[in-house]
Length: 195
Image 1 (cartoon, rainbow, N blue to C red):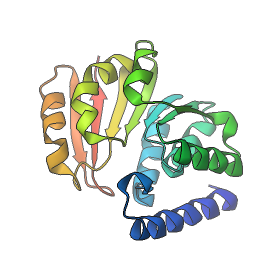
Image 2: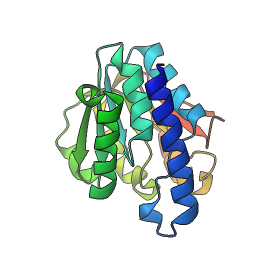
Image 3: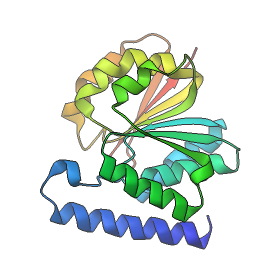
Image 4: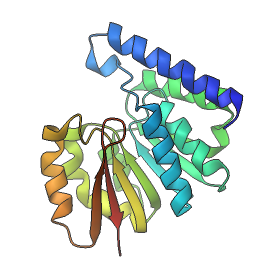
């Protein structure tokens, strides 16, 4: 990772932490992943050589930069979805600053509607860091969009275990999926689509 990207990530980490400590409105918080989670996601993407990556929950683009860093050398693309215009604009500027605009396709949209427009098996890697109450309802679309051999990674699996319990149980009861709870950052629930 070059010095420019490293410096930008550190800046966004600091900004996110300061913002979230100060702001009381949940929707105005950045809620960024940890640096360890970013490195873990990048490692997974590189390991499976995922070129088609989807992120649900862009925020200010901190996690997206880790994903874009991972796909850049693979010639891949990150599609990222955010419903807050304010956060989407912050993220767009950060993609430009990092020089990743050509590797990131941002969408200002509600995730459920976005899913309707996506084709089957369109992504090899999906990172889910959004409205946890929607995940159970999104599962059929996520299954459909994820390619065989692809990974779906869900953030906050330890920090918000109770909110994710129904989703985790649903996935574990679905045939054709292997799962693991990884204690990185706030906890990552990793799902492999076997076929």
